Length: 274
Length: 261
Image: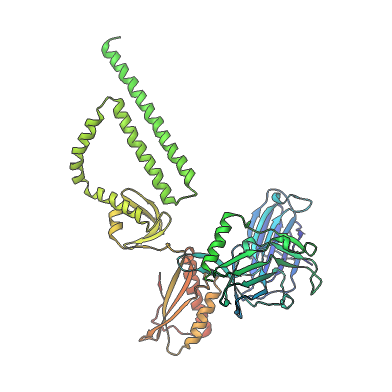
C-alpha cells in the first residue's frame, strides 16, 4: 500500500500518518484544515508506514491552521525531492582509481507534499491548494564551500552500496544511483558528494526485483572527474530509463535549464574542492 | 486695465506657470527615478538602486531650480559666479558637512556594507536602513533609529556582522577538573547535532584553552547561517545545561558560560 495517493478526509475527523521519522496528523472542520508534525527524536525510522489511521483530535498539540477557498475533502500526498542539495558523506569513504568507474546506490529521504482537492474535486493540478511540504526526516544542515562563499545544503551520513538489493528503502525514501567516473590521472577520494536534488526526477519503479512491490527511485546522478581534474555533476535525462519499468512520480523542483540552477551547479562544482 | 493691474496679472500668470512647471517636472523626475529603479532592481543591490534613484532625484531638482531661475529672467552665469564666491565662505562654514559628503563617497566606493547588513559601530549594532549623503541610518534590535555621520563611520572601527553567509558563535566556559574531557566533547558535539540550525560542516570547534583556577577552561564554537544567531545561541545554551546535567558534567558554581558574538 502506498501513501502517495489522494485520501478522503471526513469532516471533523483527524487522521494520522507515520512515514520514516515523521508522524503527521491532519484534521478537517469544514473549510478549516489543521495539521501537525512530530519528528522522532532521536531518529527512529518506521519501515511499515501507518496509513491514514483515524485518531482523536488533540487540541493540545502544536497545530497549523489553513482556511481553504472551498469545501474540499480530498488530501493528495505526493513525494518530492529535498528542496536543497544534499551532501552525502559515506560511512566508509572510498577511492576510485584513475580510469575506473563505479555505480553506487543509497537511500535518499524525500519530502511529502500535501495538496487539497484531487480527482473528482479539482482535477486540474494547478487548481489544487497546497497544504504543506515537509521532509520525512530532519536532515542536518551543512555548508558546501568555504566560510566566505558557498551554499547551504542538507547533510546525510549514509552507507553507499554497489548492489541496490542490499539497501532497505524505507517508505518516504528513494533509491538514488550515482555513477562515478574517474578519467583523471589521480585517484578520486569519495568522502563527500553533493546531490543536486533540485533537478532530479522521482520515479515509481513498479516492478521491484526484490519484493515485487513498488518503490521510489531518482534520476541517475553522474559524477565525472575529468582529465583536467574538474568535477562535473549531471543528472541523466529520463529517456535513459526503461519506460515500462518506471513511471514519473514527481517532476524536478527546478528545471536544469533554469539559469539559477545552472549557476548553482557551477557553484557546486567550483566549491566542492574536487 | 491699468498698467499696474496688467503687470500684476502678468505676474500671476508667470507664477502659476512656474508652479505648474515645477509640479510637473517634480512628478516627472520622481517617475523617472521610480521607473529606472524598477528596471534595475533585480540586477543591482538595494544600496546601488537607492543611490541611482537619489542621483536622478537630486540632478532633477537642480535642473528644476535652474529652470525656474531662468524663467524668472535671472542671469544664471552671474548667479553661478556669485555661488563660486559664496562657495568659499560656505565651504569654511560647512566643513563638517563637506567632510561627511566626501566620507560618504568613500564609504560607498569601499562597499564594506550595504543596506540590510547588520553592522556594529562604536557599540551601536543594528540593521543598515540607508546610506545617505551625510550619514548612515541604522535600526537597532530594540527598534531605535540611529544616525551615524559618515565621517564617524570612516574614522571608527566598523564590524559587518552579516558580511559572510555563515558565522561561528563561541561559547567559553569552565568544567570542573573531575570532568572527563572526552565525554564533554562528545556531549557538546551530540547536542549540536540535534539542533537543525547548527551546521555540521564546518565542524564545531572544541579547544581546551587552559587549566584555570576553577577548572578546565574550554572554548566551543558552533557554525550557523547568519540569520539564525538568536535561535542557535538560545538552543545551544539550553542544551548545554540539560545535557551537562544528564551527563554529570559540572560547571563550577562561580563559573559562567560566556558567549562571544
